[in-house]
Length: 313
Image 1 (cartoon, rainbow, N blue to C red):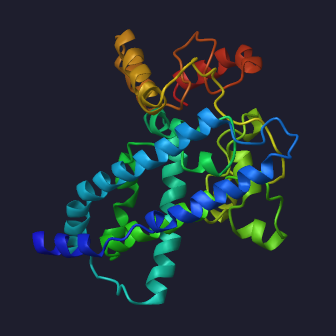
Image 2 (cartoon, rainbow, N blue to C red):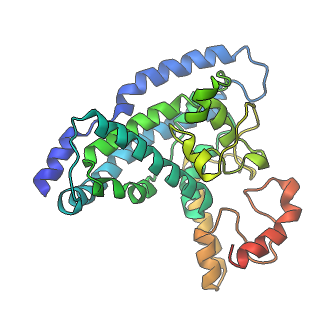
């Protein structure tokens, strides 16, 4: 098994690393083009862009550790438990794998928005109030949930190294979704694929856009599972809650985990403790009046919603 894992490790290539020069050039071109835009959300805010790029570089290191930690486990599933092993040289294997990885992306992405412990990591990506190519690389440093949602793939016969490569191509595609320079694309493309118009809605702070458009490459998952919002708008971006002044990268990456611990320690009810970890972000016990996932204008309506969640929603 050690030899198999070593062979798989030697075959792992990260397409994102090879795409870095393209990312840098794309950011430079976009920044120059946005200088003439009049929208308040347009342009690059230097401190925010700088922190986004630092998070992106850091995520490469954390993804390396993630691959190292999961390779052996995935190799065991693939070699010992998979009923078959799909050929890695067949085009149809790669096509099916890219679609399968995209479906696991949708599931993991939805989990990361609807379960607080998942949101604690994904929150970093949504913390930017700008929407441009630099915010695309504003990535989390704790990709633990990916391991859970990828686990079926080696069991279905996909070689572990091919999963990492397919995921890399998924990330490259999604990089180019983070821009305000591209409007709506032709209707057939918008129907099937995720586009910048879809992803602007996903990053929007508007209540009607909350938890919508989770897709990676394909938007058909959102159409199938009822999380689609079509449109072409340039909304305000970022988090619903007010960002603490001077919040640094470590606070952005891990601050929500600390808040979860504080909430869990504050109550003696095991039901509430579990809800603080696994309920949707912003969950509060009966009688609460505010949630960080809702804008202030809607907090008056939250008490009844919190009571419903407390009653088992």
